[in-house]
Length: 402
Image (cartoon, rainbow, N blue to C red; front, side, top):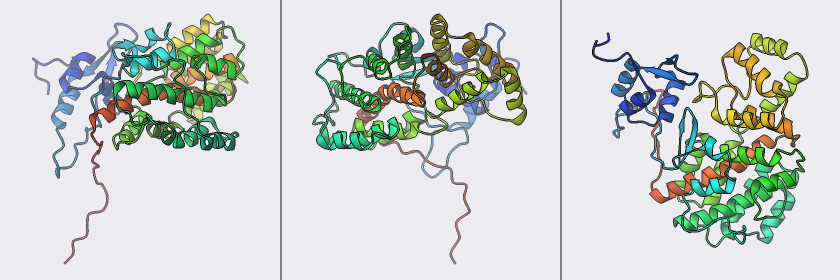
């Protein structure tokens, strides 16, 4: 029963403050059904949150005490200055990513994420080290998927780089730039270059569309980081053991390969191809009736639409893309399911618009997110703390020996 002096609803800021959590964690609680939310009626993105759910969650949350088990509402939460998530999209060290994407290069974005202030990590001469063994791996994996090639080459890169364990802020940033350039060159199957990575992508894939450079640059900036997603949390756990930045990026690439993470982009492309090959409305109705998924639609945090997708859609429309991709299809699917398009679908549309190689969605995602992984790995290394979550045991009771 509600106390008449207590409000029924809280704003996002009030709810987050009450729980002493970030807005991103609040949205995660909502996605898990722990806090109910509903539109305020004051704009498309405005929402309010049930105060009784917030109070109940606050009462259930308590610091873990050795031997006392876990509370049901506990989630891994850690402090970070790298990024957070708001209803307006990710924030990189205080800068909104969608605003940054209007003009910043990927290299400028990476420099911001790494908080590099004393020198330019992307100086022309700061190229990755390539040993004969690494060259052999590059040749041997020529036909392998881009992420697999990068993982194989990175496994030898720590030994090749004499500064791989330089854990000063400047050292991490300089190493980070070498890692980004190495990942890009291996994935694109080109020699390491100091040119901006969006330019390298356009040249390697021979993209002739007049807006290709701006679209690729924008996508890289928007996808550079997204707080503690699955791959980034994996990177932080791995980095907490004291490994190099090269090895931490390997951990991120392995996690990104999953079909529920970086692998969603190619699935969204197949959905787009299917819809464009027939009657869009009829295909959507049939998929809904059969209970089939719509890859690239819906997001556990952005319940009212992914701002990163909106940013890409705006740029795609300026580039003259067919409105079926960015308007008709999203409207049909939202009408049928209530789900908005996310950045994976936006990448699929960009692939189609620019006639890029099959599977390029995951490649672009991986190159972009490498910048964020390096930032989070560096921050974790600086703490010198091992991440050791606890588990809530739900197996059979131990047998008591007589």
